Length: 128
Image 1 (cartoon, rainbow, N blue to C red):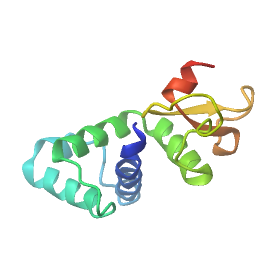
Image 2: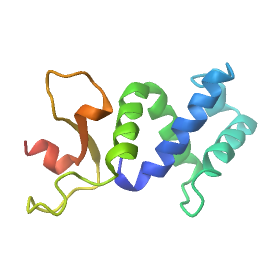
Image 3: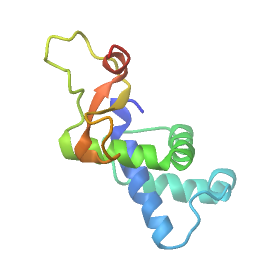
Image 4: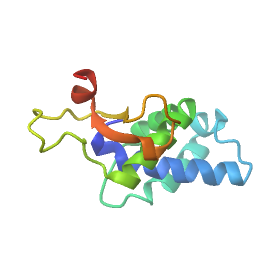
């Protein structure tokens, strides 16, 4: 996920959880195949991030990606919403940041929770 896509994935997270609570089967292929369902899904997701525009193709690809990696994205969004949506190393004389968001675990032996993680860019994550 790119830093610029945060609002898209955050909106997808909210809609996805709403579907699960309503027993609507968010992983059903119907949401990606049928035109009416695609339109309904993209409208639901788009209304949460006014000002940012993403194509239907981008939204549906992100929806599918989120569904395949739900736990990873839930953690990433939780960390970003808790501690900020910028690379931890930004403005720390560690060089220019890249545009891809990653999670860095502060306690490698600790539980996989937002309190034990920070957001970093891919460049800084690979450099550690």
